[in-house]
Image (cartoon, rainbow, N blue to C red):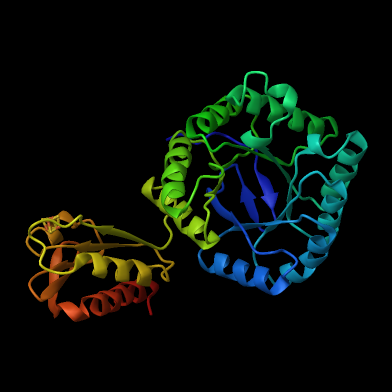
Length: 354
Ligand code: SF4
């Protein structure tokens, strides 16, 4: 896969675009005015590996809460603003690392110029976030099309470029995967700004993860995409986990454990569904790359999962622990998960030289 060449943009302590790794981001769904709840959620997102956090700033009170939210918070924070340029100025004043605002929607050139001036002074980028659901009316003659989305993005881009502002990221989100794919591909041929990619209003954790994996995964495989947001109706921590799974599946990033597990078959004699669920939960706390297999039978399991660093396979009332396909020891079924976690610890400590 050849990654699309993009202009790198600095966002707080990280770079988006250029040669920087594809970053994972999410958005809080707490009331931004509730500082404690928002900080709590951001801390959980950071622990899950989130590298950029966006918060909605719907009113002045939310903007005023930003300094307290950001205090000692070690992650770039982006303020998401619709329509009101004064909120953008307030967010910049509060010290955010980036803005998401569409310059064409904030009421004229003077207001755009004021936001651009303030953003330039603080060296913060602006993401133009085109959304299929809120395109300008005059672009909707043929309905919501990829062409209309691209045209909308280019309009917003040219407003910023006319003011000599180029610290731009762009997203072109639609809930319709083929529309979103076409839009990003078309725009990729026209500009070199980094892309924030995602499928918007993707759905619940189950359907949204699948739609996101298809849409985001297809683009990434073509080399398109510099930062990723999975949008789910659910806990944003799940968004981060799903985003990393997509990146891991494509071999783009390695973070945390990658679990493989067999579908079970007539040879399975242990409760593998329960065991796999427990292992998945326990692995969520591991941030080092390690491939872990959970297999239904000791006859085929170790061989089928010999590419895994470590794994377990079931027998009758007991199971085996194996490393790279080689059996290490037998353990009773009720201790399988515990013993697997100990083995993972040993591997990680060995790597770290502890
Ligand atoms: Fe069946 Fe064993 Fe393969 Fe699992 S590992 S699918 S139980 S043969």
